[in-house]
Image 1 (cartoon, rainbow, N blue to C red):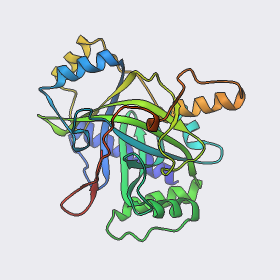
Image 2 (cartoon, one colour):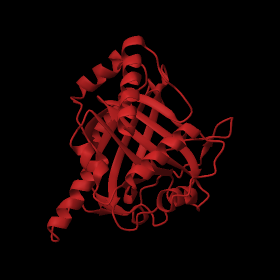
Image 3 (cartoon, one colour):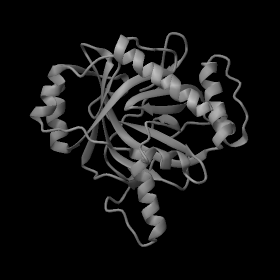
Image 4 (cartoon, helix red, strand yellow):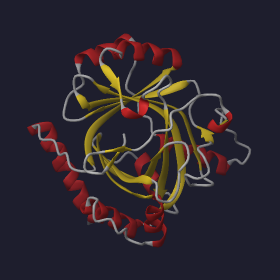
Length: 302
């Protein structure tokens, strides 16, 4: 019954956005379309140069290198129901994750996001709240509802229903290095990101053990993600994609990670062709972002 109600809400949201131009923007709720494109390093540099006059780096991507670490922990049931359902490509699907920005979690009180990410007919919806990392762990594993009167209570209740109904736990740690931009013309309604060094691990599923993991994509290749809110893709962006021969392709980071893990379970001798990546043992310089605090005290991150 809960799933059906959420499904109807997503249908209504998509209809109002596509047919009537109504956009729902609430604290911690994002509705948007997401397109993904695969590219090598040379294409990434060429695309970045082509976009230079049209975009500006987001607060986390300032500096010479511009990449920062995105740390995720995906929740799932003991039988991996969320990811198996997602890979079946239903019209409506959802997943839960915990997210932290930076190299290593500073402590249990560090501002951390817990999110529900939904998808209905390729229209993305993300709901999230910011809580101390320790409170999130206690909520997920010990069912202690967080005492957080200053965050969106509707989102908290929705998350609590999912936690009680499915009983998911911390299942997979997934990390990648990201560089992000916003459109100068459209602001946050058009967001562009590059992700690379995409890696995961299913042991030490926490933020305290660093971000080393098994690579799921070639190290010198990137995933370009384009995210739109209440607007079509601009013609200049479509033209740029065509000039670089880029075609939209599906790419699920957690889906590929899960398939890699299934390979290793079926065949203990199986080795991923992309190897292991540990940023602590590389000379690449990444930005360690500081939380961006909004005027009302909320922590912002992208």
